[in-house]
Length: 124
Image 1 (cartoon, rainbow, N blue to C red):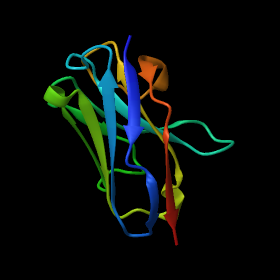
Image 2 (tube, rainbow, N blue to C red):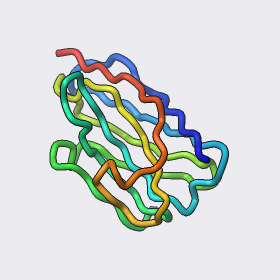
Image 3 (tube, rainbow, N blue to C red):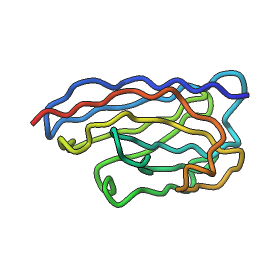
Image 4 (cartoon, rainbow, N blue to C red):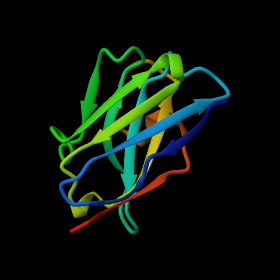
């Protein structure tokens, strides 16, 4: 079992930046692809970014491409999401997730483990 805990969310002004962290425990995530998703009330969970087990491959959703960067530090069992040029429409609960496979994926059904989420609010 893998437990994931997100941190780094909060309130930021439009145009600002935040870095989210996803700390894993219970088992190494060194051989797991990691992903970030977000959700707002009444909407489907949206794929944001994914990174392969060794960081060699990344994938981004269209709405965040060029603004968000996913990374990982396997020595710290942690994944990150650097968010820049934030917009009010980026306001959501952000979730990290871990796959049981090494390759990236954009579908939430491909991810076996999920964190509890962290709120990001972008003010205009």
